[in-house]
Image (tube, rainbow, N blue to C red):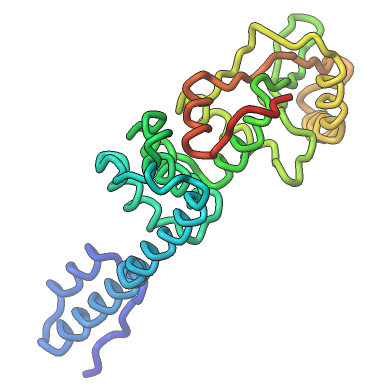
Length: 268
């Protein structure tokens, strides 16, 4: 009697149960072979990384050569192991991503320069590890200013002032490059990492910059009203904008100097 067809989507627990339930050695062998193949398939991306580790380290050295080419030779030092070792381990995982790779490489370069080594901290490695490539992109844009205008959009009932959020954090006008929802997630994470502070109690005196943000949200607001008009009567509600700021914290500025090479000489 031929063994029943195997389910290639079986989890490990299911495979173990199937092995226990098999009646013949041949059935058990077939199931074990399936498990081995599944494990190999699951681990093959990691195996590829292990094989490329030496290559990644060599590429990191090339990045450091470029970043340190203008540093006097007598300023180049062995970086502190508590920064360099975790940074080298981390950069080898993200060689395919420009944003994160550059941040780790910049941090290593600062740690290898006797003039800048005091600016680095082991916490920076852990911070980068908790950032997505998009987080790095957004933070790199935010640090072009130290204080960034931000708005929240809400739909408010005229009768009792109950409100529904349309979007809590809008800082960019280009929603193709900076989509609203991923950007809000990113900003919340950057604040969690203490790189920025979302300060809802302060705002800029320049109304024009807030106006540009509000105008960019016109289609988003119209879409929200249209999609919710059956449960939220447009006649009973109004759109309001809260105006506030995002600030680059002092810690965020130190981090940007060490990990992005930011000198803050051309801040708007």
